[in-house]
Amino acid sequence: MKKESWRELPIGGLNVHPGNSVSNLTGTWRSGKRPEFIPENCIQCLFCWLYCPHLAIQVKDGEVVGINYDYCTGCGLCAEECPAKKKAIVMVKEEIALQEGGGQ
Amino acid sequence: MRTKKILSGNEAIAEAVRQVDPDVMAAYPITPSTKIVETIAQFVADGLLSGEFVCPESEHSAMSVCIGAAAAGGRVMTATASQGLALMWEMLYIAAALRLPIVAAIANRALSAPINIHGDHSDMMGARDSGWIQIYSENCQEAYDNFIQAFRIAEHPEVATPVMVGLDGFIISHSMEPVWVEDDAAVKEFLGEYQPHYSLLDTSRQITIGSLDFTDYYFEHKRSQLAGIEKAPQVILEVGREFGQKFGRTYGFFEEYRLEDAEVAIIVLSSAAGTGKEAVDRLREEGLPVGLLKLRVFRPFPFKELAEVLKDKKAVAVLDRCVTPGAETAPVATEVKAALFAYEKRPFVVNYVYGLGGRDIKIEHFQEVARKLMEIAETNRVEQPFGYLNLRE
Ligand code: SF4
Ligand code: SF4
Image 1 (cartoon, rainbow over the protein chains, first blue to last red):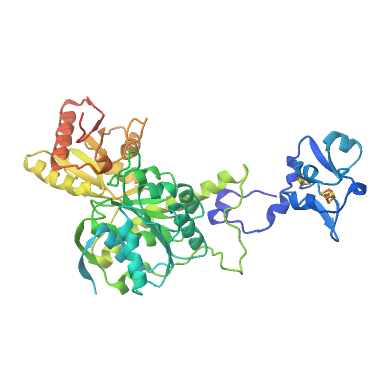
Image 2: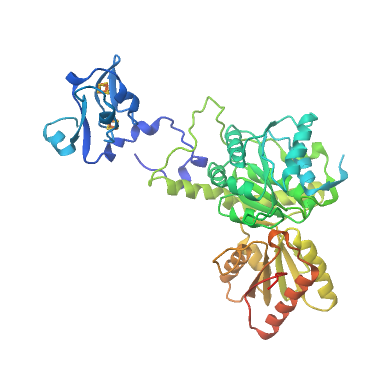
């Protein structure tokens, strides 16, 4: 997307495209680790969804189904908060996750 | 019908507010601006104002209310002083960056510590980089006139920048003078309708204000903010002229007093200019070619215009009612020096700090400055580029 010159911007730094933060892929901020979802351990408490600051926990029909790595910054809150006896979200080194073909 | 009333500077501002009848007035009373807020409250209770009067719990909140109300498309005012303005600090920058034409009356007062309720310009001078337009008033009439003009300047679509109008704490805020209060309808007509650039209440146009900028946009947004204050000089002159045509008192960036044929000049802001003019008259009687320049608009600073009238003088003294710790000179002197620096032939500039915490400045102090200037003009030498007036050494 072409970035505007200062002359082309709306007055007062107005954002005239509300909701345009979807185009800001915060997943690019991730460095080092990413969360990995282990469905068989999940008790569907939705804590991870509640705590995730980037709405990166994907929920379908009221159940956690995965993680959207386009927006996940790898902060680790979900893994920390997951109360399941065997953690249903664990932080994995990015390169290992990629080698295993997980995510994008 | 226009009437001459005996009013304090604060009451003169409140009269202007009554005539402007803003949509929202939000203020937290603080000495010496309290009487502005108090009088507005009285007007509201008497049914003379139709706008919303909000009394928040602090000045930070007062400015926040102003920002919210202005972003909703309202005509908005506030009043404060000293610590109150200091507490508004972060919101001042936001008001300017969001291009909200809020108008604030500042009863200029010293900043703590030590705590002091009297007049100096430290409060507004501290806010000089906040992006607000700054206008200073010499007397109660000017406070009234400037406050009305401030709305026209701020709300001009190409300016869309907040304005603060200063009146010296106690010296003007509490002194009673005859003030022409212009006809209500004539003031309304002068103000005209305000057309905001945007309104949060306009549901047909969805917007977000104050959203996050990264390294790729902040710089462009800051640059675009400056377009407003860059347009201000032209609008300030237009509005000042139109005000003169309508009400008989014309305003510009500054007032020249016996300056044209003067060899040396004194620059001063606000109430001290009155004393300065009297001093100039007496010095002229003695045959000293002294003139005075009373600066009215400090932001945007009228670099070119000021330099044009000063460049051929032999020596100029800038009197600052504020001090910049660690700097070579105080704020006004710094700007004056910068304005003259572009000229090959330029006067010597000296700087005197006076009147901190409301300390008097008298005719004799202006005379003292004028004699020093004459000495510089004659010897072509500056012994002391910076000093203090009426300070116990
Ligand atoms: S690591 Fe952080 S950003 Fe990513 S899904 Fe978990 S809580 Fe959300
Ligand atoms: S916090 Fe853990 S157990 Fe709860 S829904 Fe998320 S992954 Fe499943």
